[in-house]
Amino acid sequence: MTTVIRRRGAAAAALTAVLGLVLSSCASGPSQVNAAAIIDGEVISVGQVQELVAQAQRAEPATAVLATQRKLPYLSRGVLEKLINHRLIEAYQKRTPVTIDESLVAQGADRLAATTDQLPADGAGVPVEAIVNNAVTKSFPAQEQIRDLLLLNAIGSSRNTQQVTVDLVAFDDAAASSEGTARDRAMAKANQLAALTTAEADALIQKESAENRAKAQQQDASGQPVTVPLWQTGATFSSGDAEQVPDAIVNTPLFGSAPGSVVVFKYDQPSQSGETSTVWYLGVIKAVKDGPKVSAGQAANAFSARNVAFGQRALHSVVNDFGLELSPRYGVFDRATLSIAPSEGETNGAVLHLKDAKTP
Image (cartoon, rainbow, N blue to C red):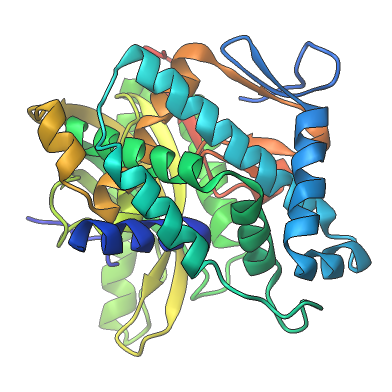
């Protein structure tokens, strides 16, 4: 039976739209002083981050509202995320080179400059995320941003498809629970499973699956809404199936994680009414099968938001192989989204491993 997960940030979406127009026409404090982050021994300095933050403030007047609201740390995290992402792309490119059409870089840069949002100078009524995205975009060279996006597209395209077999369960806040929010329950279950061996986790999931289905049948028979989480065991998802797996899901730890991984990720699921509801998914990765790779030329030419999302997820392997240290002054590195969260309690998920899993 086919399982469908019903349908990434604003700045990334804007860059993707720009290229669409062109083409159609683990973290602990770094061991080095003054290091904001360290990737494979290479340092991103605090000074570099601060210089770019100052540049972003000059380039985007609306950032003044961040200072008055004491929200400049959002801008610092946004700048550092961009720097980290660039370094991860460089590291991936050194290990597994891909090619891009360099003629598109200048075209894309011109489009980016022309389509960057013009915000009210005082930032009145503008969401913090929009101000940060605009300021970060203005503080980095346009050609560098377009080249990175083209490289992500080529990385995603060169990987082609990935088929994942997973035991999956969803948590939401539709019904009140004494066990906390949907995120609380998903993270607690992930930590419980990560303390078990593969055999122990399988047994627990089978037991919970049977018990919860029986409870769901009772609730349904009595006319009550079904509130228990139902496991989908042995569900198979393909990154190449856009109908089954939306673009936003491709850039989650459902893909790019090794067998034995216990992953948690958040997804804003749209409804027929047009509204969205936040669902927290917990998955135990059972098997991963990579599809055939495509040629470098094909990878460079086939641009899509989906390829970019899959390319972004591929950077997870760089973090696994080379490591990433983040200064606590900026928060914690969120492995679920390859971003920076203010604290452990504000991450968008987790990537853990069963006790006997072969970890990178």
